[in-house]
Amino acid sequence: MPRAAPQPDRASPPDQTIRRVLVVDDSRVQRRIVSASLRRWGFEVDEADSGAQALARCERAAPDLVLSDWMMPGMDGLKFCRAFRNMRRETYGYFILLTSRSDKADIACGLDAGADDFLTKPVNPAELRARIAAGDRILRMERELTEKNRLIASTLDELQKLYDSLDSDLIEARKLQQSLVSDRFRDLGTAEISMLLRSSGHVGGDLVGMFPAGPMRIGVYGIDVSGHGVSSALMTARLAGYLSASAPDQNVALFQIANGQHAMRPPAQTISALNRLILDEMHTEHYFTMVLADVDLARGDVTLAQAGHPCPAVQRASGAVEFVGHGGLPVGLLEGARYDQVSFRLGPGDRLLIHSDGIVECANRSGRLLDDAGLAAMLKELRQTSGAACLESLVWKLADFAGTEDFADDVSAAMLEFKR
Image (tube, rainbow, N blue to C red):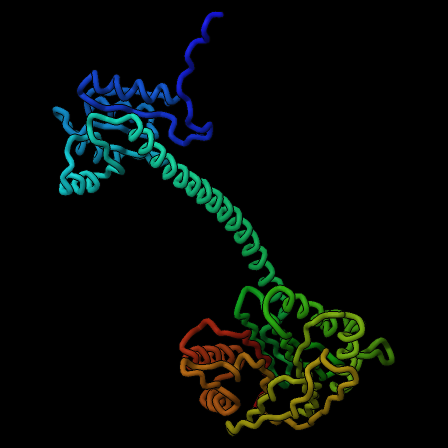
């Protein structure tokens, strides 16, 4: 029987990372000896007789592995190695210097030039194959890392797109939430009311507002929903509907009287109704603090109920500041919670400030809270400033106290001022 033709030695695994090899040597015989072994092992081999020619070959098709002689006329192996390392390429190329030198200083010089390994001439095929296998392991790890980095970069790009989309949605949500406080200032005849709503993030859990409650009568409220972010903002939107100024039939603080008119329930009764509503119907983990005031604009009489919200500040025309209320439980925590009311009268030049804990619990850089005393001091300094200007000045002073304009909590306030 005729003998089978000899098969090339292709023991390299099919997933070999090194596939294309460039052999660089000014000796044609040496190139052919090395190239013959490489082809038997299944590599695609290209040859160059000088460093300049090798660079041109690399520009045309980047090799996975370079086997380059050190001593060559013109551009030697070190200069070629440096130029090879400066070439732009997507993947790493492994570089082995072929040399008869064995001095440690020469090896260090080659490593500094960018070589990865050395082979002593004349080249031993077994050693050559072992060095290529070592290089292949390194290139495989490098390319696996490159692919993982590519996947990470792609994932980060997708996440950035999602973040940008979410950020855009949150900006729109902020505009919608700010629109819940449509009247930042209103002249009520005998009095004026100004409102401030500033979220610590895109959206927050604070809300302030007012609604008509009959001739010469208004309801004023401040709300602070637990937590931050979208879920808290959605809760404030729901509560704004329960205390609507434009739809009195849906306002839980109002009831209908003769001739289609509406009157206001006692504030404590309204807060109790909201407490039942939250516990029985909304099924949420959120709770909120609140102050609700019933204000008689003709007489200046104020009746308010407090549910865990900071005690409102009353500043008299003289500049003196007092805090009213008894604290109370937040809304949505305990069934059957009772809420107390306080009553007082505001005269010409007096004002009422309903504010969130983002003001009195604002901390300075040493951790000290502003507290009621600090707020009272600021109001005294601003006793000659009124309306929206007063609230904006209050925010500036708060930023000066905190040492930053990026507050840790939402800041909100409703200020009712009786004219002199």
